[in-house]
Length: 428
Ligand SMILES: CC(=O)N[C@H]1[C@@H](OP(=O)(O)OP(=O)(O)OC[C@H]2O[C@@H](n3ccc(=O)[nH]c3=O)[C@H](O)[C@@H]2O)O[C@H](CO)[C@@H](O)[C@@H]1O
Ligand SMILES: C=C(OP(=O)(O)O)C(=O)O
Figure 1 (cartoon, rainbow, N blue to C red):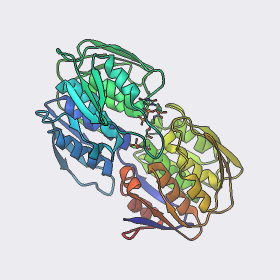
Figure 2 (cartoon, rainbow, N blue to C red):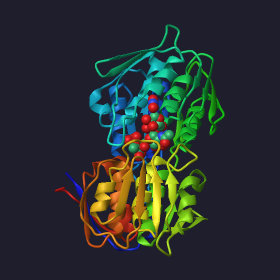
Figure 3 (spheres, helix red, strand yellow):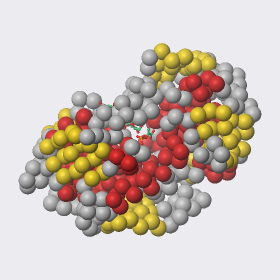
Figure 4 (cartoon, rainbow, N blue to C red):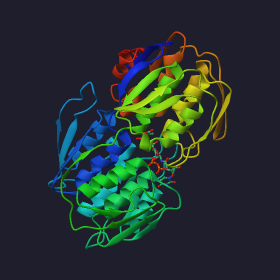
């Protein structure tokens, strides 16, 4: 098993190309199931989850071809998917257990093929992660749902799904995505109230519109979809990854660095950039990207995670690492996932002073962190340990880095290029 070895203490300076967004790509890929035309996604990040999704689609009968390698600018990778026929409507446990986003084939399969059998994703390291809202939303479009032997089996009524009214009691990114992808092929109008407003949802809507869908209210909490008989193929470019960009911004913050995040889109990143500025970092929009400079130690922050446009849960761990070396006491509250503090004991082993009380973590800034072997437990937790390692004295070894490969494209290459002493080794 691979590990990442970092010898910390170097300010990171230079340009980091920002890749296409994982969390957008993973909801754009299942859109291929909605049409017998070809869907080509460009700016597709080279990530383990994208590969797994490709395999999942292949198993459903979708042919996939990949063009263009990821260049040093992080561009040019495109995948063309062609679901001329749906050969299977089953998403098996073996793939779903590796990648929770597999649940996002449920809505499209149901809408196009009239049925879908998808392994229940279950919980993961960060929390329970139920899918009841996905299922209730699809029921509102007429689907019949059965749960048996660890699978959800959804069936459309004869004549197919029909438009309906879905009002989510809480904001759910995944449920909004599943219902949207089903509604675009349902008969009549669907109204989704209290829809998630994450930029990745707007990206999904724009791709669906490029495929012939009729959606209004894009970017708002009320989406109105006029279902179509069929959709057609399209070429669509995946949006830049705001979480990857935010993670590298924290790398500048924790190392006292100066990074140009090439291709990052500040418009989607207000809730990430505002606290960086509050912490004393200089953030500016420059030609080609977003520049983040840290002239001093970050100041303490009080942050609470919440659905967009508030501070994202996917940035909590990285901010915590940065604030562990900040000045003063920060207070972080995690409201989305009940178990998203698995990085705390590992950061503590590196010398951080962090106490968790329920959903709140009190982070007392320390003067230094010291390198140690640490174990990553989930994707963003892993990145927080890499960040800590970049600033720590001595050597940090991050184990179980397959989590990082799910969400950070060419991590060591991007960090080495801006001055980090980091390498991957095959014995971890
Ligand atoms: C609102 C939010 O920040 N969503 C995050 C969530 O999306 P993801 O789509 O995984 O999760 P949801 O947005 O659906 O979950 C939001 C909340 O709703 C609850 N829930 C969800 C679905 C359901 O059927 N029933 C239910 O109770 C969840 O337990 C959670 O507390 O994790 C992703 C990966 O970290 C992040 O990129 C998303 O930003
Ligand atoms: C937890 C994440 O992703 P996933 O839902 O794919 O596990 C994430 O992107 O931080």
